[in-house]
Amino acid sequence: MRLITGIDTAMPDVKRKWNYHAAWNQNDRLWREDFRQLADCGFDLLRWQMPWSLVQPKRDEYRWDLIDPKVELATQLGLEIFYPVVHFNLPFWLAANGEKHAVLSDQLPDRIAEYTDQLLGRYKFKLVIPVVEVQMDAFQRGRVGNWQPHFKSKAGYEAIYSRLVQAYKSSARVAKMHGATVFCSEPATEVQTVLDLKDVTDVAGIDLYPHMHQQHSIFGFLRWWWQTAHMPLCISEFGIPETFNPSVNIDEFNKFVPAGIDDNRMQMARLLADALEQAREEGIPIPYGGWYPGTGNIGWGYSLTKERKKADCDRAGIVDLTRGTDGSLKRVLCRDLVKAVLGLAKPVAPTTPEFLPIPEMPLVSSISASGD
Picture 1 (cartoon, rainbow, N blue to C red):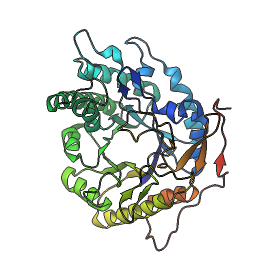
Picture 2: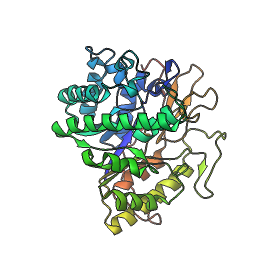
Picture 3: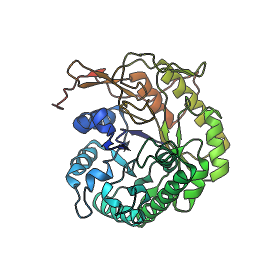
Picture 4: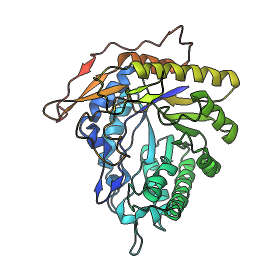
């Protein structure tokens, strides 16, 4: 299994503002340090992207300068970028007069195909997610109204879902023309969406968060997806907040956990290793997988809409964030968790924890808010 780590740069639109996660976790300033830290851990496949609305602020304008230096550094570090074309973000200019939002625009499928062609023609990405979590995007916009256009109806959800499926397929077809492997990335409960996208998808990406998805065991979800979709699987997202205790299946959401503490995540990593071993024994193909995010997140706790003001650093990645008095976020590596995740490439029984070695590095990397 080839290992994926990632940095969350989602950018959903809430009312009249963007909630840009790369600003919340300060990857927009500290991307050099984040890339180097994850490469130094031993990863060579990085899920990262720049929001479409920033790269193409106008129909005829492309800001490749926002991506060029990242791809250059990743190449120098030996990191291959696993690129989501769209992650909860669409340019406002897509909506014509009379259209309520870009997600309902008649031109969305054509414009995302055009953007995908420009993107892959320039960067030659070979591993691509056309639209991250089609079902979740439609749900947040159309059913519960957290993101624009803030619909709260079954009809709104279905209209947005249908248009996003069309957009995904348009992007996927172009990606295949460029020789890219196309992944979906859908919540663990939403295997039907995988079936809706199957005709243009090469690898079924399951976004599995055991503190949220408890209908099956980890292995139960992998088996269900394989038996339903009959496609190679990718564990495209996997993780838990440190406040979730796998022994009792309880998430103490308001509990503060110091950076670098990873006991519960370690337990979940062992459970994942066990599930992967079971999958191997049953012949379930899982050529890609990992832990998401690599560099930690901030603010996902309020239905993906609001930045937290207190105890705001989610302890869910393999690198925790802790806020300094000046507002800068220090990166704290969870060293044992890194070893466990690297060990997933060849799962072993939890009674014999033989993990792949990683280079020695400082436990805490103190980085100023300016990125110097």
